[in-house]
Image (cartoon, rainbow, N blue to C red):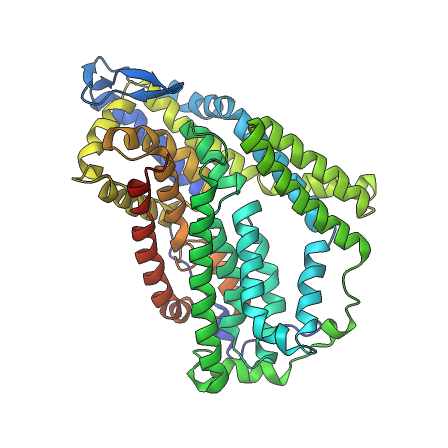
Length: 477
């Protein structure tokens, strides 16, 4: 935007997160605790058997065996062992990240956003459908290519747009931010959480698509309905907005000329968007009909990146720079995966992973698998408060949650869905770097935002508990 977003009160920009150690510190501390636990906990082992080609644990077969205490050498070598064992997933994440960076460098997605945003001044239909359209698009981005941090810059576009439509800054933040985060938490084709979790759990890649798509539609629809209700309420009486005084100051400096000067989607933008849609359709067909796995899907996104680079007329230097930047942005994610995998390596080598499983069974086990799935969701929600990488959480928790699901009568697909739903709290937790970054950019205090989000978070909680009950009724495997 030509005019920067300036909050009425400079103090409003100071959004202070709770001070927790970062993910790497937490994971290494967990590694040290696991190494210590191998000296204290007895070793244990479950018997396993093959069911439909998948190794599953035999219930009531646990027995104690001698443990193998892990010392300092084992602790220090565990990260590199974790990196090696997770090499396929790490390579997949880096390649897909690079491919999507090339897609963003083409400016096709940004052009699509601006094209529709400009049309709001010339079409009543667009004005009425603006919130459903954009929340749907951002949610689709989260559900398919893992849009999360990428939504942050769009706050700079949507706050002025929301103010021009007589809404408020909260609507401008919620459209890209909440939309993308809900799509991420209820994803059906996101390679960074669903893909990785299914790979670790030994479930066919992107299987269970139909029910996940239904969950995504329900959560996205509820988000749209709540936001439209709130936007209409603020439009009628702007003083109901928590940001009323701040927005009054912003409206005095509002300039929408950049939307009017935008020339619209160019032919190459349309081709790039068409290639992206074709890639997603090809991935679905490849996975469902031909049994594609990580290698084939990574190759597909690499082909997409090359095609997009050619259509967008990126030079070889620009293409490589964009691809490397995308991969670079996910290096920290790759290292989180390696450290998370290292925890499994230590527990396995110390012979305590089955002991941990055996101790968790009473916490999750219930008279019905429905309650077990709901307990898994609550556990994942707590973990999400501390570790915000969807890929890292999958690498950390699924090696335990997948076999635990077998023991308590929950399907692994449901365990993966419970893991996904654990991320529904991301839009409000003050330990999330994305949440804090968005609110700081928008100049909205976290406490004010949290109060506004509370009804929506309660709706998400109730929906998650309900939708985790359905798989047991329909025998979702």
